[in-house]
Amino acid sequence: MAGHSHWSNIQHKKAAKDKKKGKVLSKLIKQLHTAVREGGGSGDPDANPRLRLILEKCRLANMPKDNIKRAIEKATLGSTGYEELMFEGYGPAGVALIVECLSDNPQRTGPEIRYIFDRNGAKIGKSGSVAHMFARTGVFHIEKSKAPEEKLVEIALDAGAGDITEQDDFFEVTCDPTQYLAVAAAFAAAGIEAGLSEIQMLPASRVEVDLETARKLSRLIEVIEDHEDVQNVYANFDVSAEAAETLAREA
Image (cartoon, rainbow, N blue to C red):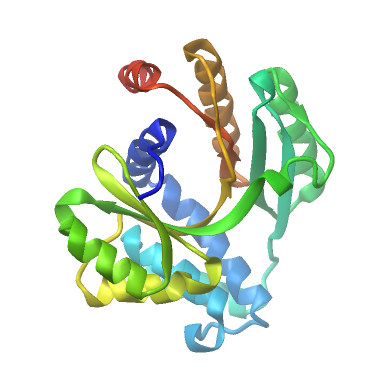
């Protein structure tokens, strides 16, 4: 078992709220479009590995099949696509941040993300300034009520997972990106539903920050995530159990 992360628990609960609010669905529409376009216009998941990844996320988000079909059909017709953008920088206390976007107007998105950083005590860095602190990783969150620990560990490791972290209410299973689909398929075959299933940028290590700094970082991340072009925000900090409880109450 890998180490416990209090910030992961906060993010897990927030992701569940965002799912209920429909925030996740609007982001997935863009991801479907981009997966089809970058797969040579193929709407066939068997011939488009990236599309298979996004369809797995759509399934877990309970996206209506009609919405998925319309998004794929629109992309195959060659409508205007989205460009992938990644911004790197530093937040309060020098915490490293990565922001991933999908934009149909990069000339607009870049200055707007920079403005958000500047207004919230953060600073945009050069390309490559913090990316080396993170690694692209397959991540699954499995509620403890969904499967016994022994069964989960056996299935995950047999499918090629790397680490399994016990959090408060769930297990976080991580794997190399190349094993992501295999692990996802193994969970599905066993009838184990993941609350989260995606490829993320995880930090190699985390620095613990105090409560006030955590508040500033939480507000910064929330403002960034509210931008319509932002898909994901990653940071390399953690908080104490006491700070996590306070942040959860305030949320």
